[in-house]
Image 1: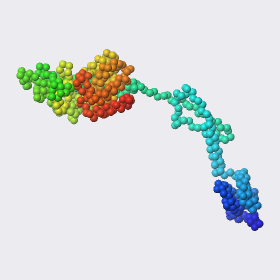
Image 2: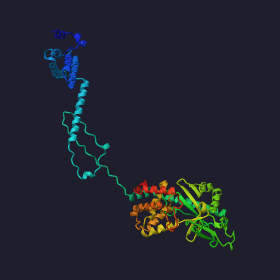
Image 3: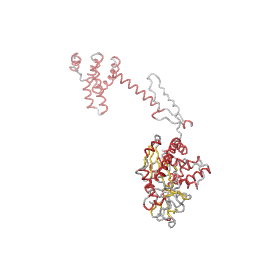
Image 4: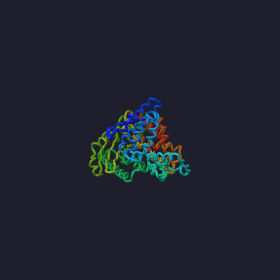
Length: 509
């Protein structure tokens, strides 16, 4: 048989040059023509190609491999195409075992095999871990916090294949303590001590600066206007009544005007063309017996009435242009500057430890009424605004003294909240005090233990007054304390408080 004789007689040179017998290639071609299964044909081609590659790699070193190659190359002539394919598949398996036993291990094959073994053990570990039934949790364990995914212990590394696989359950460490959820009462007290309370040193320093400046202003006015009977200037603000909040940065100086009772009469604003019960006019009387010039205050008359705006303008000129504030500041170890832009008589004091704003108000008193000269416009230009601050403080102190209540504490908390939120800055101490006084008529429990409930009630009541656009004065129901606020300001304040009604602690953040 020429084909057999040709294959068997090929030299080493022809084998080295890559000569390949036609046994497997021809069998594969005939198998593809007769077989109808695509999967079987693909598998056969892969097996034959791999065998041919392996055969060409090791046939020079192994005589047995050369004999097998010779047998397979000519098997199709004896067994036919189908038999040659089956014989090739069986022989390939035996051949791979022989090659693995006789040839040195390949580095790539060793790494791949080791990797495959490791993956198999990992899959086995995961399979056993997933099929293991989880023990039931005890009732006590339900109260413990579960560790987060970021802190969960890693799965144990797989052990070598020779040892039995033991799944170890990691022990959970002690759970961190559960953070305490503060109640609104506790949050209010924390906010009060951390934010609202002003240090005693700052309060004492602010009082001292205000008193020293009041004495300097009083001496200047008496020397500048010796004919005008000014009373003793007295500082008046929350600093002196224990109602300061957040910072000791505000004070007022009251400049009393000593008026002759027989020459001046106080007329409520509702009886004037302004028709506003919050304001008063001071009218000059007894013209037939005491003509103009009989009173030193006649120089400030406008249309027979003592004009608050004229007095403010005169005092502004002398306090801004005539007082040597740098010299006074150097004596008091601070910097004092009069407010030029502000409509009020304002002094800005800068000290190393604090900044203080002092507002000066000329005042006129009659019986139990205190009238302030504040900048006004239009029909209210010459009128005097009634001040209820001292009456508010006295009434709150009286109520707290009767039932050991915490109205002062609640008022300071509300001040701190309003000063921290820009939209609530227009709510003054008087506004908040009157809301508390109105609520005190219906609510009797003002103990400190009920501070959170009263705080929420004040906010609810304040929202109601803002919705109506009217806050009646506690001492005069005809006076609307919201009368000086714009509609946009009322809307902003109401919106802020309404959002915080369901979560009052938001006002403390």
